[in-house]
Length: 332
Image (cartoon, rainbow, N blue to C red; front, side, top):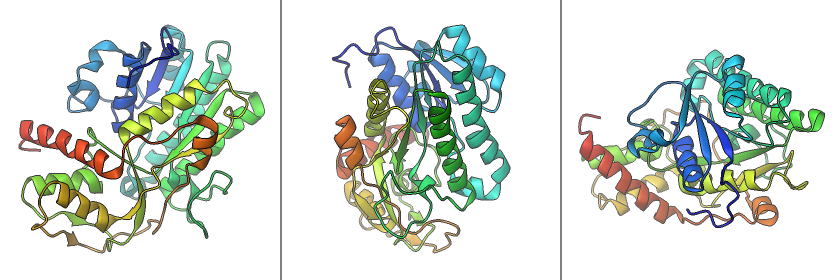
């Protein structure tokens, strides 16, 4: 993705969670657009896409936690950041269920810390994008999720995203902070090394000639979106934050390609030519919403955003990334 507008030239952008799956691709896009990037990193991860791509050598790395207010404030002030893209989070649903306190600390405290630092230095920070999730909506009587629906997470991960989302909205409503919220479904793509997630887990199993494991009964419906489309969405949202239609608002980003977990595994099997390897359906999932998918009509109408990648196109690129990665790291 190349910048044709020049918007990001000489912008200084703080990206939290910069070594995560989304963060890595956002940083790469920002650099390609001419931005100066400050990457807040908890732990150095040489296997992350940010490191593997070499882009880590083109950013300023600040080591620290979003739970530490002074670290966030130092990053903003030392580099005079005018833009913040907040992706730092504990992002695994099962981990949140096992260990809710660290998840609440990172996802909720980390968000209010960041927003408070931005509020205190609002003369410097001109735009803030906060990552929420479709999980923030919780279980609803009607689908797809639309932005006017209440946020009613019930389980720990959902609650952490509902809270962070509402806190971001409150900082705009109360203090006029130029913040917008992005809600995506299940993000997949190269660089996701959380093997318990269905896309990387299935690809790795099939690459090894093993049966993919499906924790649920395979019929849960999810909304899958390719990481490159997500990165474009975050940059698009930040670029338009000067608009009254955008500041303080939340936006769903979706390909609207709702599929069951079993179907996503079957698509991966077909693309990898591994239809002879059947998945194992464990039917052990607990505490997860059965059906979740989003409408992105508001993003299309207000932002002019639409996904570039179909599900099959995104999966094809993703599989090629993992084939290269697994070929280089056979013991993973």
